[in-house]
Image (cartoon, rainbow, N blue to C red; front, side, top):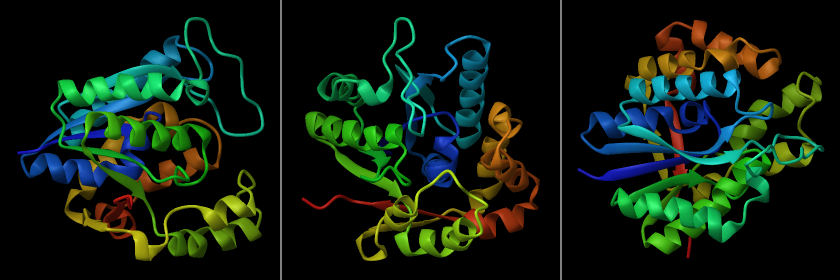
Length: 248
């Protein structure tokens, strides 16, 4: 049995990026722990924040994780505006690298972790909190002396999926450079994880994030569509996840 720590930026990222992998690792007898960087949403740590963290705890249980640890940073948001720090907290993108990595390394040591799951250098799609997860995760793994694997997706697949959508202006949030440079080239992906048999858990864990799926916006609508799909169709679409082991 190994101990795997999955480091994520926000609630629901644990499902979308590694949900099937975490469920599979737990089902195979490994101990899985989720560490969340941003536990304070853009609007502050009031009812919405408490609700969001409660949903994360439900998602973690569905996936078979042993628990969740919060590093206590605030969401930085995605876009041109970087909000001021909320009272008593720091936006994650502004966090001192060594201080944040030290917090994560302390968790890795305390849990005697064998592997850290983090994000690729682009954070998948250039979200600043996701990029910071990569930076902090890489430094923490170095401090703790453990192996790191980075959640990602094939760059070629992302281009194939998102280019027609972007050209049709159905998604206006991202620049062409973000779509073209997101993910990891297929040749550099080291682990292709089949998770179709854990699709029901992954779908249920996504459904646990009700505050996300009932919100406005295209991402939330997509989430509602995914939750409503028959499990075999969901498994066909989201039955594979990808990890890349950084080169020295």
